[in-house]
Image 1 (tube, chains in turn brown, red):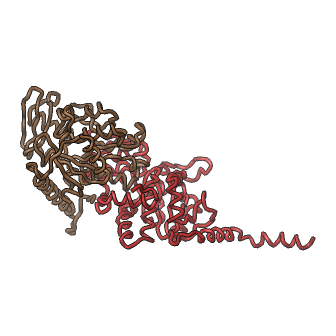
Image 2 (cartoon, chains in turn orange, red):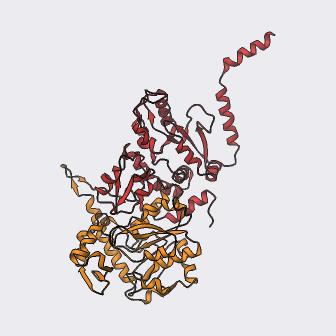
Image 3 (tube, chains in turn green, yellow):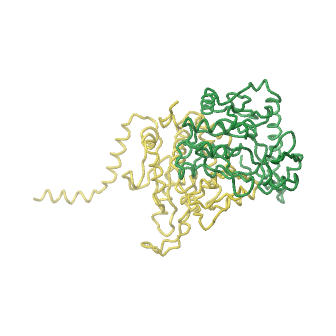
Amino acid sequence: MVLGNYKQCVSARATDRSILARAQDGGIVTQLFAFALDEGIIDGAIVAGQGEQPWQPEPIVATTKQELFAAQGTRYNICPNMALLKEATRSYGLDKVGVVGTPCQMQAVRKAQLYPVGMRYVGDKIALAVGIFCMENFPYQGFEAMTEDFCNVKLESAAKMDIGKGKYSVYTERGAVSQMPLKHTLKFVQPGCHVCLDYVANLADVSTGSVGSPDGWSTVFVRTKNGDDIWAKAMAAGCFETKPIEEVKPGLELVTKLATDKITKNQKHVDERATFGVRADGSGKALRSYL
Amino acid sequence: MVQPVAEVVEKPAEKPGDVKIEQKVEVTKEEKPVAEKITAGHVHLSGCTGCLVSLADNYEGLFKLLDDYVDWVYDLTLADVRHVPEMDVAFVEGSVCLNQDLAVEELRETRKNSKIVVALGGCACYGNVTRFGRGGQWNQPSHEAFLPIGDVIDVDLYIPGCAPTPQQILHVAVMAYLLLKGSDEQKELATSYLKPLMDLAKRGTEACGCDLMFDVINQSLCMGCGLCAASCPVRAIDMVFGKPQIDTSLCIKCGACYAQCPRSFLNMDVINEFEGITELVAAAMGTGGE
């Protein structure tokens, strides 16, 4: 299950130049939601809008393309999109909800559907769940420390952040680039990420991320029947330019490597939890496991 | 003149009218074409009937359930049966009031007569709002001890939440049917599906939004997805800087947030099959389009 079940995998980017211009990578999420919104496949999507603090994301229900476009790009800190899963069907009255999230958030979506303990008439309204690749995430304060203390860029003056090639990079409006080695960011990772065994959002309808594709492109896994159906429609409408994943560098090999690295590292942590505490008689007094 | 008087005297002396009616109901049920149904019922203790309404809120799904899978043998509001009969699955709504002998007796009878006892809803699982009862209310001022049913009997499975959702009740009902009447493969799936809810029953009879702090954040398991906030029926949970912040004065102790949290349990053997299971339930309900 390193890469999860998928029907197809391609390298892709949006054909809409205005989306691409402001995209983190290939503009896949925004383009796919914009298409689904146009076609009535979704009535709105839960995406990461702008929160109170600079570069702090806050979940919003976007019901127009303008709202989608305003939420473009990655902000490397926690955005609890699932908090709006029910609200989107209530205050916003959506019958067909789109939602984007990290692998753990896709797990939350599926648990909400299979075990809808507090999710009355919500599960069947989730029309498109888009997952994004994720190695780990940071609390806002950790992200702030990385950007301001290590990279010496005030959050207000940052134009884009990026993680790739072993570095955390911050770009400013005036073109300066500050970087820090990824290994120094590890102390800021939220601890809950260390028990996660999913890198490429195995449970999404469609999952995407930059890893595996050239700059400006994204790797896309189409996973479910529903995802396949919507992706096929989007392709037919000319939303995406694609290349076979086998023909791009670094390709699936790198995705597989990073996914395996994450799973191996975190499985070790999960195993260690079982014997973390020790009772007087030598038996384990564990940290709780959830799997 | 003499004979009619004798008849009038005889009738009240016999009096087992209830039993006769019960037998008649069963006969008509056996005439239905479906061979293998499970028997289930609803036991109403100190609850608001919201859980039962939630079951009914499956709309046509409820009819399908009753037509094809379940004989509903006991229910204060739907079945004319006085005493808790033997059944496969008993859905118990409400906490049990220790100050009311009849409630305790009925609960014990339920345990004795049921293969599987399901605590349906927050009150039966954790006490929920009845935890706040302090007695002194009309018209039973001496009723003050409302306990989750697990404090009195062994409970097999929890469906937390206030109200529990129609979909969660339906999923449990379908899985219980597969567990008791399905193929080996279906039994295996049903066992995997139901296990976490059975584990919840073993976990205890106390719940609070604090569970998110004690058993998720304090255990370094929270990753800030926000699903707890979505599941809370009283909006007692805010996501602040990516983590749940609980207003405990609003919390009604329904247990939904912790049970809904993907880091309370995540049985990947079931969750990975989300597409298949969703189709299975849809097919069982006759609503599957594909």
